[in-house]
Amino acid sequence: MISVAWLLLLFLLGAAVLTVIDSETSAQEVAGFSFPLGSSVLTFVLFLAGWAGLKIDLRLTLGGAVSLLLISLLVIRRQRRRRLGGLAMAFKDWTHPQGLLLMSLVLLLLVAAFIGVGRSYSSYDAAAGWAIKGYGIALQGDVQAAADWGTWGKAYPLNLPLQIGLFEVVGGDGATLSKLIFPIYLGSLLAGCYWFWRRHRVPRTAAILTLLIIATIRLVFYHATIGYANLPFATYLVLGTLLAIEGWEGQRPRLLAISGLMLGSAAWTRAEGLGFVALIFITLALPHIALRRRLPRGRVLPTVLIPPAVAVPWLLFARQGIAASHLGEAASGFLPRVLAGQLNLFQLYLIPRLFAERAAHPDNMGLFVPVVLALWIAGVWRARPWEDLPLIQAVTTSAVMVLVPIGLFYVRSFTRPDDFRELLVRSFDRAFLPATFMLIIVGIWMVFGGQEGPGRLAEE
Amino acid sequence: MKLHRRQILDLFLLAVFLFQAISLWDDYAGPWLLGVAKTWDSSRQERAEFFMHWVKDDHRRLLRSVRDHVPLSASVMIPPTGDDFVLSDKALMQFLLYPREIVRCSPAVMGGAQGCFEYATERSIPMITTETFPGDIEATDQVEYLYSTSTYGVLFSGSSPVGSGE
Image (cartoon, rainbow over all chains, first blue to last red; front, top):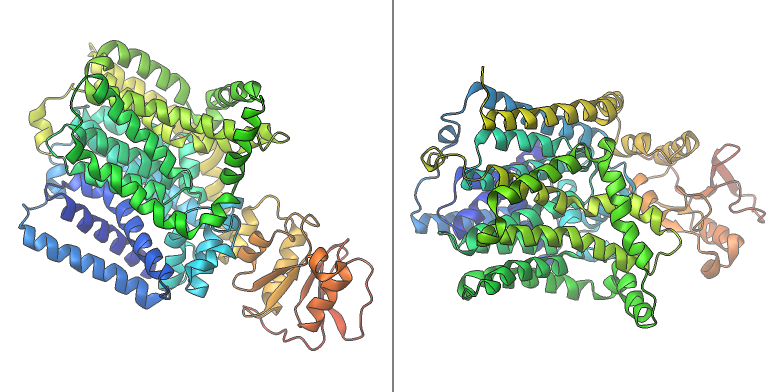
């Protein structure tokens, strides 16, 4: 019960932060963005407090969460914002089949939650990496405990370990209700996709059916149950990108500030986050420059500044640990070997080939490959994505999400020559999660976008 | 009845969803739901062990014995890296025996297996043994097995504060 109340508090905190940033926030946006934002904002504040020497205990955790919530509510009160569109309004003209599809989606998430909680942290990285680091921090009340508990020392950011550890602090995590955060991340991501599609007038039935398709991709569903950081990371990255595309030239520039927080949260979740985010920003800006338009500098500043503002404190905290991490070792081993003439071209070919083999098998990724191919072929023909800036940005950021994992594993091939194939089979699929989501989101947008009249959408 | 283009596309999406849902149920969700239902009342470590395919029954019996007899505030010594995949993995053992402190035998620092044994007994730290660890050592009279099978055991010195665990 305490754990459920804690989840609700994180959701409320995120909703309040969202509303402080953008008083136009809709019910759909609250549903999609609140939990990921509330969680990462709180863990980051607690990390800074812990690093400054405060003990991470029940008093600090609850005090921090409630204080942040109250401050946000005070700011909202001063804003005299318009009333949040009610949930009843959001479901006003839904048909019975659409309601049934939505209930199927909720049921799927509940099944994922049941399996996730029941299987505890039974995958290696989840148990020996993310969870035990959080429990260790909770036990000692000290963020420096990250160095002694679990694998990887301080090489990875503490967003996820702290999220798990705070359940131990608040009420004990014997029942592993902390595992509920993973289906909630998936639910948030799906709600964010729905929000994005509906803004681009994708018909509701097609939107919900595609959410069901995403949730039943074996890789996606599996990651909603096992407790790895890849799904939360993909959620932050994809939602941050969609918000950036939406806010870039749209009527609501403040969406870019929310995007900045999401992308900053990605940098606060995995070590490669900041580099990934930097490339996403470049691919958002490049089409703009190529179309000879003036970059809206004032607007995009939050998207540029927030991720490094989040990542730099962690980089300072973990500077020695990062150098000793897989990524640090790979990066330091890569350049000297390339300069010596070693190119690993076979490995570069092996990465997409092996993934294509695995992705094409329905047991791994359902019908992802044929569906994405069909959507993109039909979509490019229909939407002509080279004529519209947001679509160009969506296509270029999708390309980044495909290429970055390939690049990361290519770099790792230089330091893992003996077991590179096993490493690919074991780890590449999950590194491809952001691309998995983005390719479907953009494909659906290209095929179905603009098919529903704006009048019907205005009510959502 | 004539179908519109949008309805055909919706039917295509519905077919994809149904195919994936059935496949997901058969290969993953169904079997896991049954497995999870069986272990629902167990502790978080026991549930994790049950689903970790690399943790064998022998490991589970040993870990249960440690959890039953070694206090939460105590330390436990584990074999050196590479001895036994599960028992020598410090991070994994931290999770499975949380919140006990895990001390890994480091032969280079502690002076071989004998050194690790002496380190543990001098400090009254229960020590997990395997078929190969600590091997031939000179044990004192005060040392006895808290738990012992043909493959694994828990050694401790007679004066150690071993009592009820969880």
